Image (tube, rainbow, N blue to C red; front, side, top):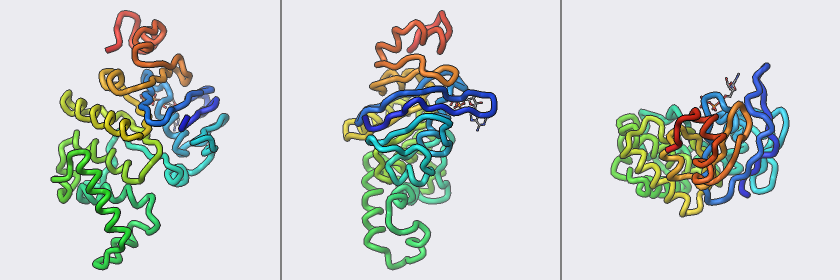
Length: 255
Ligand SMILES: Nc1ncnc2c1ncn2[C@@H]1O[C@H](COP(=O)(O)OP(=O)(O)OP(=O)(O)O)[C@@H](O)[C@H]1O
């Protein structure tokens, strides 16, 4: 397992947001976290990245504990994330946005490197070339010089993922990557995620769009009221009566 959560618990005042959650994430797989609003999905992301510290339990990356690490440390250890509300730098170019992701892994500070212009360091040239390659893979190379803000929303989401990849992570946490996308954009996103998986990338995604989940996920972890109800393949989850009841209401079918 690339990532393991062992009996992770987190409460906020009287609210038990996450309770004794255990699951593992296999390498080169897409694991989806699903569940109703307030089920604890975002809190789990925040516990993995170190934004929150668990009250109990442990998070292991490649068998080593990352519990209690600050977010910049978990990022250095190989965990990166995207946000539901995009956090791109709108006035910076598409390419520069990807490059900011790479600087997480770089030896030099981002600002320092830009200040040292026009003599660009070897490292910066390398980062620029790698970032362009990422943009090519996501079909955004032709927009490299445009301000990120002018891209259509669907492309901004892909750009955010490309930026996350630039830090050469071991694991990417995707927070509702399909939110706000139309059907065609969701399809492009799904294909991109599958391509990343085939290249060996490991991903966890929070997603409400069941079509994307059923199409892309290898494994689904279902949460309700902070607890894991069940875990399984898309086929297993679709057939699970408790999931249908808890997540969608008794009369509905998943996807
Ligand atoms: N910083 C916080 N302070 C207080 N309560 C919080 C905080 N973060 C989350 N909670 C509470 O913890 C519970 C789980 O919230 P969380 O955001 O993890 O759910 P979620 O499954 O991500 O929901 P959504 O799908 O709406 O994003 C909720 O009851 C929420 O109100």
